[in-house]
Length: 362
Image (cartoon, rainbow, N blue to C red; front, side, top):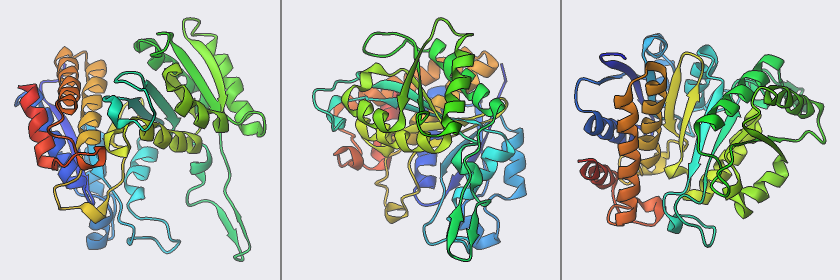
């Protein structure tokens, strides 16, 4: 157990400072003082405009040496590199590869039935986690693809035995810690791929099969990526943990978020063996920045996720207890209906949502 956890905090761009500040307020309310130090460091597209660096060395060193990283959001559409790609994305991409954050974990949970576009759904009916391999796949070609004479462009999908083995083990281990799928309470790890068409995905599936031999207590299931987009809408209660290659995981995690209310209530964590970065799954939304109307829920829930991750690493039950209280306070806040953010159909400001969660924590 650490006396005080050092949290490298990067507010970033757009609504990042607002939702990050809200999350620090909630975590401090839940934990009290002296448990966490939230140390602010610069980074993102705005910092790049000022300094020419999206991830300053001091920020990287802090991320490397802190207990965890809390991030608001990064990216401004108008701030791009010469090839047209957004500068802001490089902040967490650099951290991802430099710190080997190989597991992108996206919890998908329905807190209130009214928030889902799916009919006849109730709180808890949808409760699964998408585990996205974060360092390989098609996105490994970022910055390394070929554009020839303005006529031919190629990007290569890369999968390694080590990369697939460790993400499959991560997904099986996660299923062991959960209570199973809502429909039957069965622990189940679903492999999302396109193994019927591409050798790379057949390789992905075969390694998942090998890893499954060490987890007889967790059922293994398979779904092609096109089919799972239907299943996540028609029978989301079937799923417990889903593992996917980088690009497929990116796509289906946004679809999953849409079924529980949208990106504004979708937390995420990028995890490695030694480091963890936590942020809402949404973007920086610069069009509403500074207006106090952004929803802090995704970042607050990411903060709760951070507490659970730290609790596992440091055997600190204080953090587990605080995470549970935060999640219950969020659920209570949403059920009361008086502090609903705009993206979920309400009119509450970022400050009002934050204050309501803190009241319910008290």
